Image 1 (cartoon, rainbow, N blue to C red):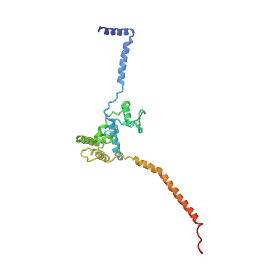
Image 2: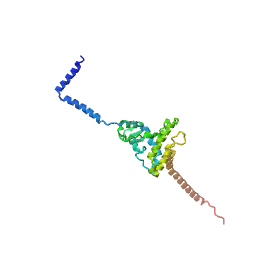
Image 3: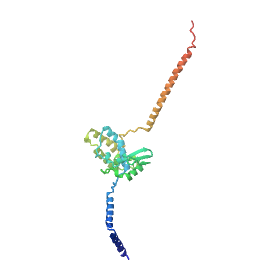
Length: 270
């Protein structure tokens, strides 16, 4: 009984070949076509890099390093790990449009999302093929050297200092200073090398003697100061108008008093 099924199937196959000789060739074409389509499907890159920590690292670079580079008119080499081309998420981050508090727009397809995390998920799902993976560099790898936890509100900074981790981050920080600002490339590079050590590297210690970003960073205009400035500009013309009207009223009142006092003068005795 068990041998009858294969014989029956083979008989049906022979019958189909007899009725339609193109059956076998069609089967071969379909199999070949499906295999070709599978081969031609674009390979989505596999990414092992934290978008959140890469964003934090770039924020630190923008806030606490770029102002000094602009002051020195210094251009980072592409070999420097802090260069924008070594951030695989940089192009996607630049295609984020923050329209309003609860409105983020994709710069590629113009879709709108109510929070940045949903836009990040959209990038991972729809635009992963646009990642800059040519250099296979991850900016998040230098987060330890750049004190990213301070701009991420991370709980890790509240834990006890680990001397081994501090030494490892200090070594990475010095490597960044040496590769990004070689002291043999002139006075600007030498000054920036020294600044980088003071700004980032000295704080990698469990002694607590130095604080990160000790040289300061980008200056932000205070919202309170901006609001006060706008109010002053709004009320200053009103103030001057009130002063002008008051002075004019005082002059007019003084002239009327003079007119009243003239007829009431007594004649001088002869």
